[in-house]
Amino acid sequence: MMRSARFSLTGMMLTAMLCGSSALASEPLPYAPMNPARMSEVIRTLASDPFEGRAPGTIGAIKTVNYLVAQLQAIGLEPAGENGGWTQEVPMIHTKIAPDSIAQFRIGSDRSIDFHQASEIYLTTSVPSSRIEITEAPLVFVGYGVNAPGRDWDDFKDVDLKGKIAVILINDPDFRAKPGEPVAERFGGRGMTYFGRWTYKYEEAARRGAVGALIIHDTEAASYPWSTVIAPGGETFDLDRKNADQTLVLKGWVEGRAAHDLFARAGLDLDKLSEQARRPDFRPVILPRATLTTRLEVETQHMQSRNVLAKLPGTTHPEETIIYGAHWDAFGKSKGPHGDTMIRHGAIDDASGVAAVLEIARAFKSGPAPERTILFAAWTAEERGLLGSTWYAEHPLVSLPKTVANFTIDVLQMAGMSHNAFLVGAGQDSLQDDFVTIAKSQGRVTQPEALPERGAFYRADHLPFARAGVPVLPIMDLAGYPDLVKGGVPAGRKWLEGYMVCYHQPCDSWSASWDLRGAAEDAAALYEVGRSLAFSRMWPVWKQGSEFKAVRDRTEAERPAL
Image (tube, rainbow, N blue to C red; front, top):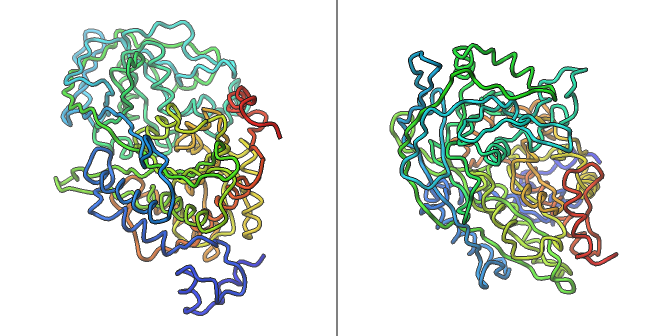
C-alpha cells in the first residue's frame, strides 16, 4: 500500500481530513474513525496552565477529573466507578523531603562526607512521619538487588539486611554482559525486565528488611539523566495501605560519580564490583566501616485521589470486560532554578493517551452496541509509580479473570503518519499478533521496540494488569524511531530525540504545529483490535515463556470454555 499517495490531496481536502470528514477522500483514512483535530483539542485543554500540570491532590487534579467526567458524559457512556459514580477513590500518602536535606556518610574514623539533596544524592520516603532519623546504618552493596529463582539468580544469598542500607545497581545483571559471561541472556539481554526497574529494587529491599535502599544512577542503564531523577523535587506519592509492614524508611538514588567516590573512600572499586555482580555466584559486599546518618524533615499528607471510570455495557456478555486506559496525571507545579514557578504540562505524557481513550470511546459509542463491556479509564498517579492502576488491580470493580484485555496508551507521537509501529515487550501475548494484522491493513509494518533497554513494558499502567494475569497491549511511542511518511527515520529520530529533551519537563506542552494523524493511527489500530474482541468469544492468551502466563492459567476455570 503506497502511503505517499495520500498526500496528493489539496489543502482543502487535508483540512477536511483533520476535521474528521472522509467525504472527499478517495479511500478510507488509515486513522478512521479517529479525529486528530479533536484529539489535539483535548491535549491543548489538559495541558493548559489552568490545569496546573495535573498533579494529584491539587486544584489542577480536581479540574482534570471534572473535565474528564464531563467528556465521558457528553459521549453518552455510563459511570463505572464506585457506588454508581464516575470515580474510584485511591488513598495515597504524599511526602516531601526538605530541599536542604543532607545524608552524612562516614568511613571508619575518617571525617564525614556530606551528600546534598539533588546534588550527590536524592532522598525520598513513603513513611508518614514528620521526621526520619537514621543513625550509623551500615551500607551493603547487593549488586543488582535481584532475587529470581526462575532464572536461577539470587544477589542477596543469606545476607541480613535488617537495619542496613542496600546499595543497588540499576537495570538487570546482563545489561552490560559480554558474550560468554555466565549471565548472558538470562535476563533478556539489553531488554530490561521488571527486575531492572527501580520500583522492583525498592520492593525487594523492603522484603529483605532493609531500613533503606540507594540506587546508583547510571544514565545509560536507567535510560534517563540525573535531571529526571531529581525532577519530582523530593516529593513522593505512595498508596496508603493499611498495615503496610514492608516499607522502606528511606528510598533514594546516588549520583554516579558520587557513588564511585564513596566506594573508593571505603577501599572498593565500584567498576570491578559491578562486573562481579554480573555473575550468579556474586555475594553481597559490606562497605568496610561505612555508615549513613541522616535526619530528614518531612511534610506528610494523607489524601484521596481518583481514577475516572466509564463504560459501555455489553449486550450479551456484560461480565466480560475490555479496558482502554491512560493516565491523567503529570508533575504539576514546582519552583524553577531562578525561583520562578514552572508547570510541567504533561501534554504528550500523557494527555495524548487520554485524548486517544476519549476518541476510542466515541467510536465505540457511535457504532453497534458491543457484546462485551468496554471500560474506559483515566488513571491517577502513574508518574508516581503506577499508583492508580495498581490500586484498581488490587481493588478491581470488575472481575480480572474475566477481563479480556487491557489496552494502555502512554505517549503518542505528534509528527504525522508513519510506515511503522512498535511492539512494546514483543512476544508477550496474542494481542500483539492482532495488532500486527491491523497495522498491516493500515499500510504499516510492525517491529519489536528498538530501545528495549528502557524497559518500557515495565513502566506503564498496563503492568499491574499483566501482573494480575490480564493480557495487555501497550502503545508507547518512545519504543523506537518512527519511519515517518514525511521525512523517514531521520525525521522520526529528530522528533523522538527532541521530545526526550522535554520528557517530564515544562516544555512537554501543546503545539499548534503538531500533526496528530500518526497518533490517531495508533488509536485506530487499538480500537480495531478491541472491537474484534468485543464482538467475539475469543480470549487473548499469554505466550509460552511469558512470566505472566502462569497467573492467567490459574484462573482458567473462571472463563467460559470456547
